[in-house]
Amino acid sequence: QVQLQESGPGLVKPSQTLSLACTVSGASITNSAYAWSWIRQPPGKGLEWMGLITYDGSTYYSPSLQSRTSISRDTSKNQFSLQLTSVTPEDTAVYYCARRAYSSEDYWGQGTQVTVSS
Image (cartoon, rainbow, N blue to C red; front, side, top):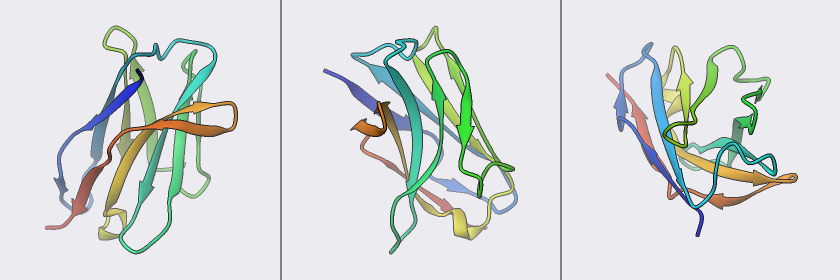
């Protein structure tokens, strides 16, 4: 069974960098059939796709977030990570990691709340 688990601080100060990790079990992040996404949902708003990393380490980002977003991976831990720089209160959201198969995400983590506040 595929499981994804987000981890990281729940509170980040404005202008700092938000860092989250996603640990995957039941599937390998180097399997060529899949890519691995980060998605967020601000309070009262819809889901926003942030970016993904492919099985070979290539990355793709949402144009609106590209300048502040970085996704990386640690294959030895079967883990991939998100960094979002220069955060503001508008980056407050529930952050999800997910597996992408073909053109949609099929397995999701439970999500982690991140609040940006001083």
